[in-house]
Image (cartoon, rainbow, N blue to C red; front, side):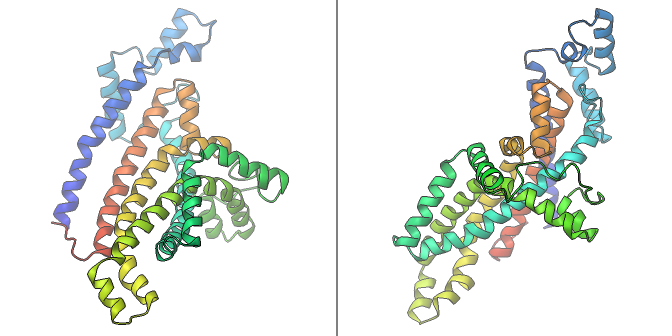
Length: 335
């Protein structure tokens, strides 16, 4: 296990180096001059040159990349040319909001997708199976931003039972920041009113973000359960008269869940970069909205910081998923 972990951690190094080079190159090939954008049309050449020198944008690209990489090793992701804030500070502020939203959406997707998949497989070609398959097809085919808008209109405007957007009301005082996760901070502060408010604001964006992974998990779980149900040991257990519930939850579920676990890991990483539209619609202050604003303003440092953070998180999540395989299949050994 130790040697496996060391090898996987070492493999992360060239991946992250390649990601940093690719991101840096693409960011600087985008047409437009961020210095001119910030300085404004009335800026003099001296003011433009001074601003470019302040941010190191007057250096050759290889020098700029070297300065950026050496800064990262010290925890310095650079400074936003638009807000003049340190990117590391912004990432610490916005990243927990995105992670909290993704965890909530994946909880919904797993809590509904796994039982839906099992039910669909057990009731194959009957009414429950057909309804679940229709729902899965509709969920995976519908654009998330369109679903988000429909949810806002229905629950926020027509029924007026849930807030339209944002993470917490502007006029209310949030719980003291400890972890950056509003719901967890509210629990730690034992502020149950703030917890209820935070959860209400999270329901619509989490559900809108969960539909695609929910549909995929359901379909994958259905296919895996159907495959395992045809195995000889399952047929033997059924012939011996074991209860179907015992067979499903003790033997079938553990073996069928392995392939679904891979999909869950991939979706965790995919949602990190795919939450942009949902965060924009609900005005959710996460890294998706932060990255969108930075791209529009050609702010290179935040763009590269967000990309690297997503890359590191994705690699770590894949490592965790690989280690979890051994919990469901004891035949898997890490050497």
